[in-house]
Each structure stands twice: as C-alpha cells, then as structure tokens.
Image (cartoon, rainbow, N blue to C red):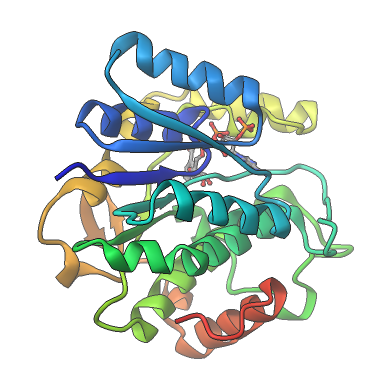
Length: 285
Ligand SMILES: NC(=O)c1ccc[n+]([C@@H]2O[C@H](COP(=O)([O-])OP(=O)(O)OC[C@H]3O[C@@H](n4cnc5c(N)ncnc54)[C@H](OP(=O)(O)O)[C@@H]3O)[C@@H](O)[C@H]2O)c1
C-alpha cells in the first residue's frame, strides 16, 4: 500500500534529499517549506528526475506556533493516515532572535515545532499500521551540560552554538520521553544524527564570520553530501520491523549512545512539562 510522509524543511539540504529518495520509492510526499518559491523549486527538481512523483507542497513558518497548528490542520486533511513524520527543519542563528511568543527562535523552530507537530498529527499517525516520527537531531547536543532551564532564551549569554546545542539536546530528550509515555497505538519515534553534512544551514542570516566558518567546516574532507546525510532518516522511514527499536538515537543506520545528560529522566520530564506549557498542549497523548 502507498505510504505518505510529511518532511519538514524539505526545500534544501537533508530534507530535500530525503524527499527525493522517498518520492522515488513511491511515497506520497508532503513537502514542507516556508518559502513558496523554494518549495516549488524543490518540487520541480524532484519531478525533473521522477516525473510520476506524488508531491504536495505545504507551507508554514515553524517559528510561529499558529502556523504550526495551521500546517497540522492542512496535513490532517491531505493525509488522514500519515505513515511518517520527518521533523527535519532546523536553524542555526548567529544572533539571538525571539518569536512572537518571546521564545528564542532556534529553540522554537528546532524543538517546539517538532514537539507540537508530533502531538497534532497523532490522529493521522495512529491510523497507520506502522506510524513513525523521525526527529533530525545532532551530536551537537553533546556540547552543553544540560538544558538552560533558568535562562532558556540565553539572555546575556547567547551564542549560536549554545542555542543550537540546546535545541538538539531537546530533540533527544523529547524522543526518549515520548518513548517512555507513548501507548501501544502511538507511533514509534527515532532521533537521528545525520553527521556533518554539506548544506547551507550555517549560511542563512548569520554573521560573515559564522558563514565563513561554516563554509570551511562543511568542505572538510569526510563530510557528507545531503544524500548521505539523509540515509539514516530514509532507513528509519522505510525499514520494516523497527518498532522494537523505537526511542533510540541513530547514526549511520544504527542505534548509538547519546550524551549522558540526555538520559536524565528528570531533565526530560521537566522539559516535557515546560514544552507543553510553551505550546499550549494540555494532554499530549
Ligand atoms: N548540516 C549538518 O551538518 C547537520 C548536522 C546535524 C544535524 N543537522 C540537522 O539537519 C536538519 C536539516 O538541516 P540542513 O543541514 O539540511 O539545513 P538546510 O539545508 O538549511 O535545511 C533546513 C530546512 O529547514 C527549513 N527551515 C528553517 N527555518 C524554518 C522555519 N522557521 N520554518 C520553516 N522551515 C524552516 C529551511 O527552509 P529555508 O530553505 O527557507 O531556510 C530548510 O528547508 C536540521 O534539523 C539540522 O539541525 C544538520
């Protein structure tokens, strides 16, 4: 039976490579973007190689909670049964920016949107015989000792690396806590480390110094192409029989250990409750 996947941030980098591959395997791909021009260019690029690909564009700025909610409503109509949600969209910001709700933007896009979209799409994911949520995280989560609960927005202490690491630690804590709380009918969940991938993530809206640093870093030998960086997400979306390995951290298509603080159950519970508050979710499951 034909499967349906929603991939956030599918207009470039790892998300586009994931969309290209899954479209080629016959999935209906809901291709998410925040810029219509970029989303149409991504769709056209996939169609040029695969003219029969089944693609639908969905739009939302994931730094805006009301747009995350509207996106979910649209997806529930387009895909009453959703087999896979790939929470992939992400940002790396040199400068501190706050959302309309007053939340630091990296944390909002990279964590709050993953959490809220997962919750709002549960009705469609539960209808799949093998529903899955894939959260694209990063080994960058190892760069901080824990979530900065006393200063989540990093006021007076902001650095892009710190904000990014915090958001990616939140991805891993979310995945583990989701696994502890989920019921038998709920989708499986996986966190992914894609590796160091040659994408444009460090070039968007950042200072010239950070853009230069990213250009040099991504060109270093051994770094992955977007297609290589997408391999674990694609494996987790397509490989049968993975339900028993739900709630793990994956790298190179294999589970691996994440940083020690990501296993702190109190930290995960506090983050979960705080995220419910920030997203207005009363009962996640
Ligand atoms: N590249 C790496 O080495 C690396 C390593 C570890 C983890 N990751 C993770 O991999 C994921 C994909 O990143 P990438 O490297 O492929 O970067 P990318 O090429 O910049 O792709 C990021 C995607 O997210 C979208 N996005 C960003 N902010 C958004 C917002 N506010 N609302 C909606 N969409 C938004 C981008 O849209 P626009 O095109 O409009 O900006 C783009 O489609 C991220 O979660 C990242 O943290 C990347």
